[in-house]
Image (cartoon, rainbow, N blue to C red; front, top):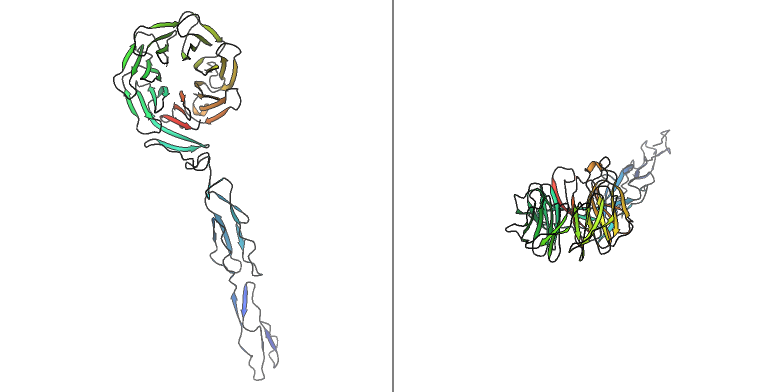
Length: 430
């Protein structure tokens, strides 16, 4: 108020501080009777009103008077586009406009989701990751990653249309449904069951120290030895009529046992892992990939000079070998190679791998397990059959040792993400 002299006709002028509106006349006049005309006005804080709320967000504005602030936020998964905070200004307006909430990920029917991690939208909207308890599942890098079962350390692993089967260092043969659920122990007391496979009429495995080739019904039951006295059998395969195994040589018998036939033997065979086609058997051992007719006969070397090849897979065109590398550098110089089934040039599909231990091939890609400890490169890997696009499907695994695939998924056994327990895993899609 300004009133320098109080005499008749003098005026007092009133003003309000910024952010306040005047209620009443801004001036008063000194009257002849010595009183001021009218009444003193009042200053009332300006209420700026709510600033507004972003769609799919919220606004926090506890007060809406001069110098008050409003702070905005968005629902989970959305990002603010604009200013996060605005202020009530002296001119009676907010200092900015209400921001918007935008989806920088994927909008799935109005929900903003990260399809790399959201188990209800894994890899795309409405692709739901599921597993039957006690199996668990998560979304990892846009793929469904299921822990199907906890187990003792697995040696071999195989799948059919309904289940995953595996053998363990503790001498067990186990299975779990592809969709997860409770694991079943089919057999116990086996003597280092090194590898396992599944035929239409049963589960087959080899006991490395027991020197036996075993069979039992798919759903469990009595296990029988269909071949005994087989030295140290390390790998097994079946076709429509016969069972084949590697024990340094390549051997076979019928599904129900009987006479054992030598398919390939002698100096240079050294068979460790094998695969069969409709006409030939293929195997790896002592730095080579080799083949012979299923009925026996001369064997042929397809590849040589490989560094500790430990597993083999075939398709209709090539044989694929996983080689763990030299003893001194087995965590750094493993390879995955291919060679035509009829012979020819050996091609390196992937090099500098962390001790590949198992290999499988699908219609367009080759898969393998880098078995080095998690801190040194343990991972599940993939490459195109032409050697392009090497991809780490699942990183940081502890000692993955056995893999298998079906039309949609990859399965494997390893020591768990932190190496604290052994597990059987599934990744979809592969």
